[in-house]
Structures are given as structure tokens and as C-alpha cells.
Image (cartoon, rainbow, N blue to C red; front, side):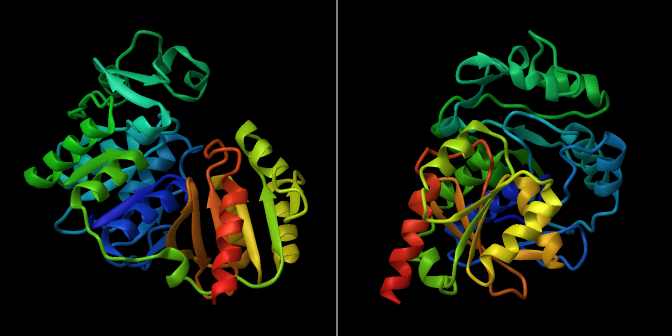
Length: 327
């Protein structure tokens, strides 16, 4: 589907990998950094909180495929130095990017060129503080022009899933080289391809054994509500700094199941394990992705801190329990 996928954080990479799994019916690797990439891998360049110069250096050092689509996964609320990263890639590929960050299922849309969250202008809301160059009334194309004047990008509207599916079809038929969007666009690709393989993530993944621990590194209200519903189902660890939290969570989970809430939390867990990535088996509950770190017996569930219904973690753990009982 994509020759190479690049994501600016780990949970976002896992979401895209899960969409690829649905499309092709097989697990996908998520790899940290730009080394040892294989066709179909999702590369994590953790640049969301970086300065633009660092994002550009990361893009400049990436080995790019000679053909096929390069997909750049960005945050649906447009945080981070993604404009500068895309500008660098566009120059290297000599390609005009198509940029479609909408994710209608989560209230992120683009209408009349204006990025919206739940129908309200994104650049006038609380997320605007984290978007360099954002200004009330500015269009998405205007933001791109402000931060990368030489970049010529196509920025289509997308208000519904049907709109996003039409964007995906156009990209496939036009032979685009550089495509930029949220996980919503990756899911649109999976829908358009319509592959029905009978693949079941819980059947393909190694069985989860041992204790369950939750590393709640995200401060998002959604994570707090999700963790509260777990009760005594899992040992919940909070605070302490992400590196200390990751090590404590790994010790609590042993070779059982570890739930990582937040992209930075999940990244620190892989760093603590000293591994370069993970195998993604798919989504087992809305917004919750099932994975296994490379070379590890740990079952890892990842979830973006701000995403998922209140019972998302509970539903994921119940799905794991059911699969284990059937084994």
C-alpha cells in the first residue's frame, strides 16, 4: 500500500500500522529511526516536540524508496514541525504533496480550506498554542505557505469518511509519490482497498500471559477516565517522569501485558527495553493497538493519550482475556 510510512510519534505509527494490517492481512513492523527499514515498515521519527531544524535533518537523512507512495502521518490537530519535514521530503522526491489531515470519525475535518475540530476552527481553539504560525482565520494552505513559502501542496477538503475515501482513491489512481495525513487517511486507504483476508489480530499474536500493568504517562482527561474504569484489573503506574515510569511499568508487567497510554510513554518503554521497534498485530479495541516489541515476550498495548472511549482499555483487556481462554 505504501512504500514507506513516516510518523512523528509512536502511537500514531501504531495506528497507521494497524490500518495497514487491516488492508494486507498480516502484521507490520514499526521501527524507531531511519535504520534497517524494509518495504512496508512504518518509521518513527519522534519529532513532534522538536524544532523544525531537527525535523528537517531527520527527513534529509532518511533513505527513500525509488518508487511507490511515501506516506507521512501527522497529528490530526497539526501539532509539531510537520510542514518543514514535508517541505524537505517534497524537495528530495521532487513531488507535490497532497495534504489531508482530516479524521472525520474523531471530529477533525477540513471545510472551505479551514481546519476544524468538532466544527470549530482549529486555529482559534486550545490546540492553536501548539501549532507554530497558527492564527485565527488562517486557512490550512495559509499555514503551510507561512512556514514553507516554496512548498506547493494540494490541500483538499474532507468533512466525511466518504470525502476522505475519495481523496484516497484519487491518490491511488494518480500515482502520487508524497501523501500527508492523519491516521484517518490511512484508514481511508484500507477501506478503499477493501481487502478481506479473514485476518484476526488476536489469533495472529502470541498469547498474553502473566500480570497486567498500565503506564499512564499521558495527562489527558480521556486516559484518566479509562484508567479509572479498570479497577483492580491492572496495576496502574503514574507520574515519576516517563523514563522512571517506563522502567517501573516493565518491572510490574514482567513478561505479561503492558498498556502504554501516550506516544512518549510507549517510546520510553521501547527505549527501556533497548529494542528498535515492535510488531503490530492490529487494533483490538477502538484506539487500542496490539503489538509485541522486537525480540521480547511482552505483550504491548498502545493508545494515544487523548483518544478512545471511556471503556477502551477495559474492552481491550477483556478481548485479551477471552483470547487466552480460547487458546
